[in-house]
Image 1 (cartoon, one colour):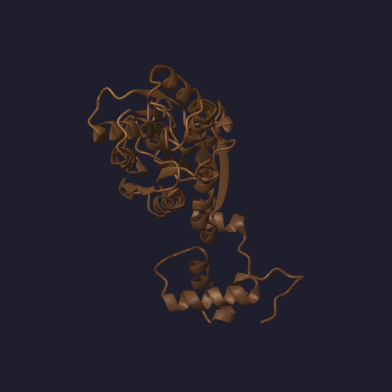
Image 2 (cartoon, one colour):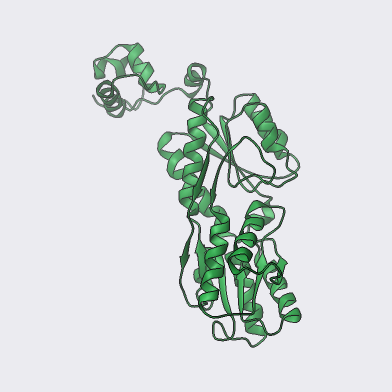
Length: 333
């Protein structure tokens, strides 16, 4: 059937082309999963052949869904120059795009919490993917109390009955430690991540435990390039004989490498450096960075899948999906 450019195709026309009733066609369009797969395929072909476009307002009345979810990212200043967040968006979109669900990007500021909750209450959003929640942030608890679909990007610092996706952070820290120990480095230090986050805590714990050194010298950074540079300078002043550094993010490692270069230290001959993430920053380093890889795009896609599952079934059990890290060998260690 030729597509009409002047008249909106109706659901009745789709049903006629597919050879089914209007009610059956409507069930397929509205995502009812109990329809026979052969019939669903026929209706989908009819939709493609006729150029039918569902009326969003009418569909929302039937499904009670907005077909939109929010991806809430940290404050805007954290997004600039950090490739992690671009990977998250790409991973989420690999699931949402084919599902026909719109992604609403939001950054955390003073108004975001009220906006998210208001949009969920008014039916403008179906759920939330929340990235890097802070210990003091009440948003996860509020979402749970109001029974809104939500998935967070890491194990909560404060235990909550919430679905989350994470990498095995302690195992990642241990991979870095064992690699540096295998290089016979014995004056090892670390630039840890922020200790108000589980990622910052767990990477430090895994690294320190694998070395069996509770007194391991360390400073706290905030996963940014600038904090890596500051931390490296502090460690060099306190421990000038250091011969290995684990930075708990690639950006912090990049900042540390710049300071080591300025101090006249050769990498890896004088100081071996290992990062964490395996982001594009690792390849931008000089030398290219040996790093612990977390599969960010795969993890983000899993967050989107778990969220859509909650949207479909609000009684879906709380779950934790934890991905294994791997060590990527390059020139810095």
